[in-house]
Each structure stands twice: as C-alpha cells, then as structure tokens.
Length: 116
Image (cartoon, rainbow, N blue to C red; front, side):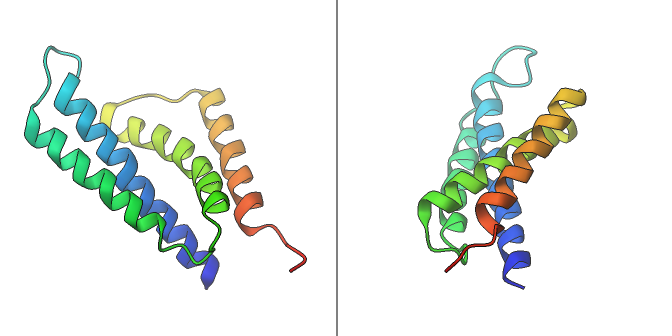
C-alpha cells in the first residue's frame, strides 16, 4: 500500500510541476504563434510549482535526496507524456526508451530492496 501511495504522490507532483512549468511557458512564450498568454497563466504556474514542492514532502520515504532523485525519472516520463497530450508532441522510440529507462531507475532508487 505504501508503494501505491508513493506512486500516486509522484504522479500528482509531476502534474503540478510539469503543469506549472507549462503554464509559465505559455504565459511567457505562448504556443509559438507570437507572444505569451500573460500574467494570469504565469501566476497559475507559480502556484502549481509551489504545490509541487508541498506534495513532494508527503512521500512516505523520509530521505529528501532519494525522493528527489527518484522523482527525476517520473519527471522525464511525465514531461514527454505532457508534451504529447498538451502540445501534440510525437515522441519517437528513443524518447519512449529513455522514459522507460528513467522510470526503471526511479523504481530502483525508490523501491529497491534495502538491508535495513
């Protein structure tokens, strides 16, 4: 049950962090058609990024370094998935392979058997 809770928190953290960064990007740069969407988008992004920082503290694992390192794998895979859904990005086989390797690394760091 702890692993399921941990995975759910990683996913929620990714939604807040990647979504927040995407909102700031849209606020500043827009969708590439000229100009950003403005301060409301930027402000919403900043709030989402702050929520990410809070959600990360809810992990059952108590070691900050381990949690943040493992989250990196979720961030990699989540960023590619977000881009595919939100921006129509088409990941190639190398993007997908890299995301899978990152998730495997996350699983080893976070859930690998330890002798303690």
